[in-house]
Amino acid sequence: MTDSVTETRSSPAGRYAPLIVIALGAGLGWWLFGDRLTFAALAENREALLAFRDANYVATVAVFIAAYTLIVAFSLPGATIATLTGGFLFATFPGALFNITAATLGATAIFLAAQTSIGARLGARLEGSEGVVKRIKDGIDENQWSMLFLIRLIPVVPFFVANLVPAFLEVPLRRFVISTFFGIMPGAVVYTSVGAGLGEVFARGETPNLGIIFTPQVLLPILGLCALALLPVILRALRGKRGL
Image 1 (cartoon, rainbow, N blue to C red):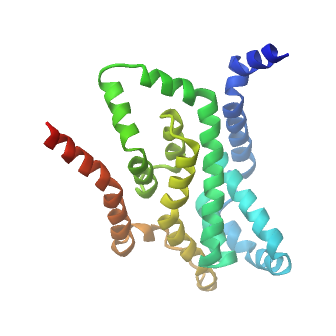
Image 2 (image 1 turned 30 degrees about the horizontal axis):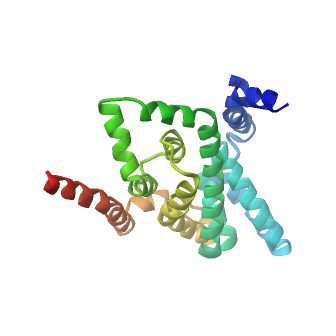
Image 3 (image 1 turned 60 degrees about the vertical axis):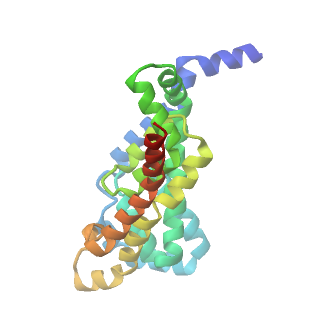
């Protein structure tokens, strides 16, 4: 009995099952919701959403977090709209907390699917390699916290990529979850605050400025956090040179 279970887990179908489920879910989600999770859809349904929230606050929170988690887990279009919706329905706080929690749960689902399917094998192969590849792997391992926070803080790194790369580098689950939760916090708070002001935007018949994260007053503090994340790497490099 035990041998058959082990064989199933080690078989290609069993090994890649989590990743296959994610891929199938993503395809189905794009087919069903590809053009529906839009700002226009939010604007059209805002009154119904607010009415449902007022009548069923706890249920609205639960449904929102579940829906946002699925959007991230299956890499569906509309993650930004979901973040704005969190601010629109629940204000900057606790909306930002709901957004960050859901995004972290969805990211963790992708991470685990990739890690259990091909991540562990790829990580072991990289660990057993030699030359430049091994030195790069060792450098990342020595600075995992800094690298994890950096890829979350830099606005240009796609969220999907930031979920997969750690899975291929044998990053521990606890470290991935913590760095994701706190690393996405600055950007999530910014977009949630934009969502919190959507009532006035709707009243003027306008669309929100999603490029706000690239304005100096927002981008410079985020870059400062990036520099702070890199500080341990720089200090370690300087100590290494002094040791030489």
